Length: 235
Ligand code: ATP
Image 1: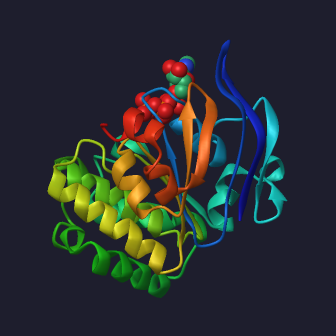
Image 2: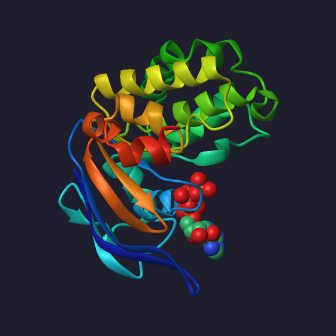
């Protein structure tokens, strides 16, 4: 579904991504793990065309994304739930969700139907649909960011640190939801610092260090490697 081929990404002189290649297959959960600053967010921003690679190619559903307008990435089925819960804090929950479907130019009936799907997955958002998003708790804002991305009915969902800053019980809930979304047919590329939890739900993983992929493989197999245990799983 998604092939990343030898991409480099720079911020001015900073070489943030160094010749990275990886792939995500249909219906997989693939996770990119790595410490702060390893380049995880930069990769997701490149895939959703917020950033441009300085070299290399990204192929999405057989098409090179170079020739695709950023807003058409969503139409083609790629959605990005960004880190830091970048929701529209002055808007209501309902308005945030509507924004997620905006680009698809849907009928009111389709919109209502998708909204119901999101509300079924996130009943808390339904209860709070008229509330301003900025007044939601951290966990609720995270759910809204995911719900908003789901409103575009993505084939692949890019998720940036969905568990960041959440209480352990909410972390469990978020990871369960990610698995449910995947079971319902959506391919997932998950960026996480919580390597333990990410590896538990992923099919495959890539380990990123200072802009390079240093290890890759089956997620369960990686979990058992000593170097992963030491560096990422707390011993
Ligand atoms: P985090 O978990 O902290 O978000 P990350 O793995 O997602 O880490 P990135 O945010 O992708 O890492 O950052 C990769 C590298 O690029 C870091 O060295 C970072 O300092 C640098 N970087 C990120 N954004 C910018 C920017 N806007 N300008 C300059 N350098 C940047």
